[in-house]
Length: 90
Image (cartoon, rainbow, N blue to C red; front, side):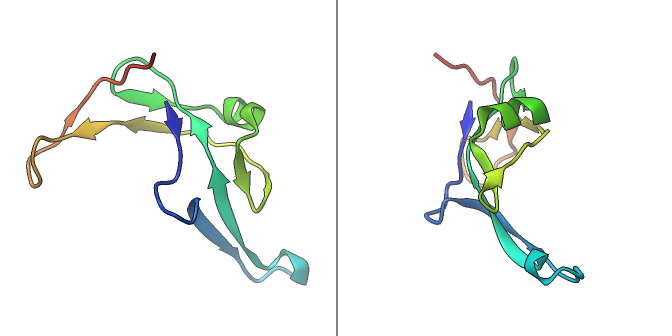
């Protein structure tokens, strides 16, 4: 499954680095792009190597990696308890 930011800015987040003795390193860096998560059932995972090799996720414009495990949940109506759902791709 391809994971992309839902917002119009195209950013997952911004990370602010402060207090470095090298002033040029003190900056706010956006996390942008996309990554693929795979797995059987509702739990999807990535590895740092996989995401880095894809070269689609960027931290401050530089190639980035990510290791994560996430479970996809859904509910029928707002306010109802969520349940894991199986994700399939074609």
